[in-house]
Length: 485
Ligand code: MG
Picture 1 (spheres, rainbow, N blue to C red):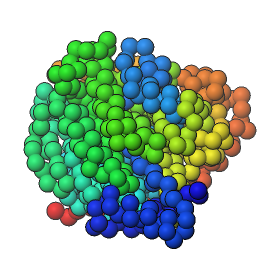
Picture 2: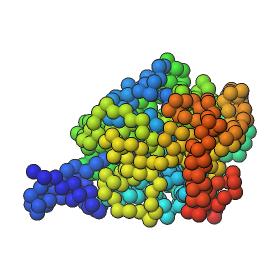
Picture 3: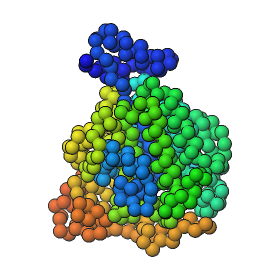
């Protein structure tokens, strides 16, 4: 009996309770066409904050216990050359949820509690795209694309929101953030939809509360297509963990926090299984950027890669990506193709046959790559803020001269000191990432033709997206939204 997936995917949402509506749609389809619609694809996107490339067992961690996330990887595909689009929170999430470079959508830097900016409502988010296809949508956890009511998830396609709208160290509480400037922050809000329901919530309970909300959402909408965006507050510093996990890991508080996130993922996987949704649900697991190394021992590991969060070296951008979808993706795959966070939304757009949005994606549909094809990208461009600092094409990565914050020679965090990186700089530097993933051997002098090619690619990006390092204004960039109050 043939399947008619589109019949369900293109139904606009109605006020009819979902279970009844889908049963009705299936029966009508059967009567009219003689075929049975497939169940629509559910999407669960789990994002952690500042978790490093090597902070999962499946990515080589030896002292972290992540059995659920390792099972997720074993049952799907994991990528070893996946790039967060930026090495900091707000721009990384802007790209993840729009499929475009952060510079394109006007959010190249981290938003602070004093900021009046947010993601422009003219941009189409992943949630808006799926909502318009009839999906139920929820955002749980950290947002960081604008904390004013106008910019919160409920005004970007999510039906509901529960979480801390920016980083958990953006608080005047000196025990959570010893930076002197933090004394000017307002108390940390916990937001439900567009209303602050608590200030300075007990952060030990956040992961548990997020998880409870996630499972309730799945149970409530188990008979409808849904998109759950689960954006953990942790392991961003300061770290907190519930009593059930305190002292349980082999890696101190950081390991405890990772263990609770892993257990949360297991709880979500169990909820899907309990409602017979595993087969038709695409779970995506990733991190927004690399580890905040100056916070060691409360930071993760970038494994073989150089530096971490806040830099355009591989440790800042290269993070885990796991996809599990038993109905479509064979289990047990590992791909070394270069793929980007910006690819997730175009991939889901293709899978759900969503109509085009107002602007073309920078990302690409990953399904051909998942099926064994090559990377869909000629190049990836590494921005720090508005500065274009590096490009990767094939195995080659070129840095143009820039300053950076280095963990080598840094002063690490203490209870009264936030930690200070050592300022360093790089010359023009060419690395072969296949042979030298740690970016240690500058081959620029040996391969002038490769350098010239990569510089040409960078110039194209510079004209398109802009570059504060050279003072070029991009010709295809748009502004963020701003509130006037
Ligand atoms: Mg982050």
